[in-house]
Amino acid sequence: MRKHEKMLRAAAIAISAVAVLLTACNSKTAATNASFMEALNVHFIAHPDCLFVDAPRFPYETYDAAMTRQMDALVSVDLLTVQREPSIHASRYTTTAAGLRAGPRFCYGHRVITSIDSFSPPAVSNGFLETRASYHYKMRDIPVWVDTAQMRAAFPAMATAISGTATDTATLAKTMTGWQVPE
Image (cartoon, rainbow, N blue to C red; front, side):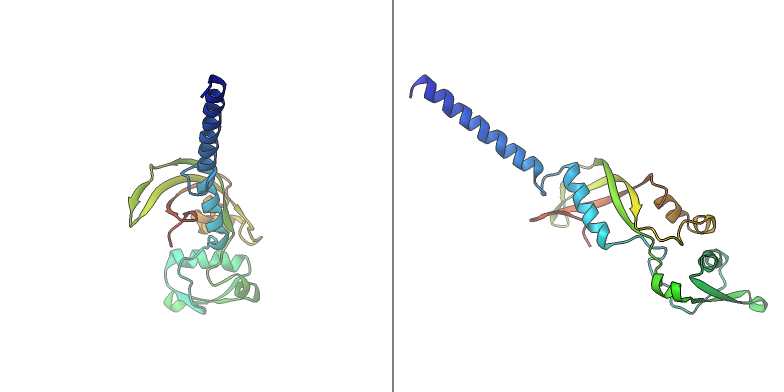
């Protein structure tokens, strides 16, 4: 081979190597901030944040002061009505028409990831390559009943989530099609 042909061949190999590296870096399966953001955003579209993990069954009766405060906040935004039984210190809550649409878990939006702050080196766990990512997020599709002083006071986790500066962590598992949050 002549010197010119060797240089062209070396240049072609170098260009191919760079193309492979760039493709791998942009792949959904690569361990990058972008692939983690995409996976988390896809997950949270289908998994909204809600006031209750386990939905209360209505009518709902409680004697607990903390739960009464939370339910009274929902009364203040016209999602529930309340009947009090002072003699036994009980409150009985039922849903309003608006509460039927919003309840029973009372979801208040979904997360949109704004940044990946850090992630652990991917390692095999539970048969999958997994990582733990720390991220910042903002809430989207927040209903109007959420942002009141009484609701923020009764549900501090929700208040933090809608603040616009919320952070959290999530485990992500690598699959054939990319990263995803294990169910």
